[in-house]
Length: 275
Image 1 (cartoon, one colour):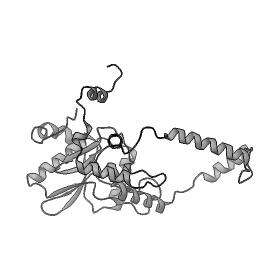
Image 2 (cartoon, rainbow, N blue to C red):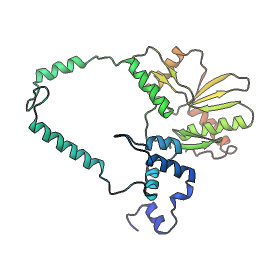
Image 3 (cartoon, rainbow, N blue to C red):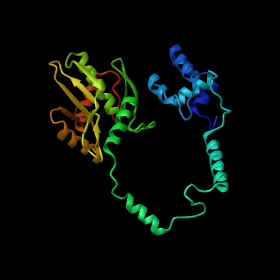
Image 4 (cartoon, rainbow, N blue to C red):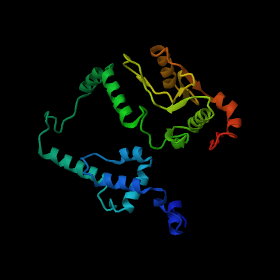
């Protein structure tokens, strides 16, 4: 059994059945996505991940079991090698577009190009466009990290699926749901609204608080769960106070969890261990 993965061991014992947790509706969604024609360089996996709440490796594994794809297809590395070979052969038989075939820039020219690039300002309008597109497509402006730290994962809390980036964030969502069920708040939402810092040319151009909380009297506030503050986080908080001074923002930091985790873990279901 040495060298075998847990999945392989369970499969040999007949205890592994990935299709058990997959509904017929999910299977049909995957079949429809793979049956649709792909554009060159386009993959349906990102959209399927968000739609089904499944990791792409599980989607691919299920697609192979359903016979929608083949392990015998050419791999990306082989395609890159073939493209590189064609590229080199083309340049051996064709002139360089700018007459630089077989030539190199002098050190003086390289230094001049470096100086010309230093101090170049990034277009703020382009930054805002990129971030708004990312927000519309993925629901967040954060980088699309597949394997994050601090136990980031999809959780189902209060009948809704959220992607919590830490156990602290997941537990605070459970706390808000507990407050809602007990009539202490009216509603809570996870990352529903982004605040833009119009006019900022460099650095943080927007801020996406973790939670939007609506009190019973109708007032709205935003809660941010922070285990620790890096320079970027501090900048966002400062700019939030400057550009959106009327917005109520509450920071839920380590002291709050240290004070409340022990008693809340005994009354709130599925509370995750903070140790």
